Image (tube, rainbow, N blue to C red):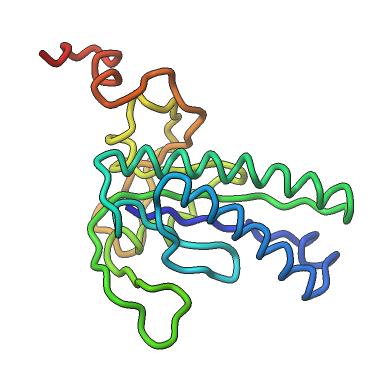
Length: 199
C-alpha cells in the first residue's frame, strides 16, 4: 500500500519565495509528513521535489495497513494547516496539499546507488498513486476503490467518480476521505454496514 503526498503547485508559492525559502518550506513539509507516517508505523520510501512517497505494510506488516495510511494522510492535512497559517502570516502566500493513497501489488528492492532511502518500489501500487494527481483535490485525502474497500465503515468518504489511470487496465473509482468514523475496527464497520456480527 502506498501513500503519495505533494504540495500543489502554486504561483504564489513560486513567485514570493526565493530558492532557499522554497527549500525550507519543502523540508518543513516533508518533516511533518515523515512524523505522521512514522506515527502510523509506515515507512518513507522516497522524497521528491514536491513531497514524498510512503509505504504501509512494508517493511513492517500490519493487517490494518490501509486505515493506518488514511490516518497518516489526515494527520498530514492537519499538520500542513499549521504550516500554511504561518506562511500566510509571514509571507502572505498560500499552498494546498494533495494526499493520494492506493492499495495494490508492488515489488520492493534495495534502492539503487547511494540513495537516501533504503528501499525502492515498483508496480501497480506506485504507478496508480503517482498518477492519482489527475483526480486529486486540494487539501484532501483521496483513496482508490481498492483502499476504500479496506477502510469502508471506518472512515466517512464521498465518491469522486471513476477515472482512467494510465497504466491501469480498467478505470478506477476514487473517494475523498471526509473524516474518521466512530467505529474502531473492520468487524465493527461490517456490522454498521448491515452485515451480521461475527460469532
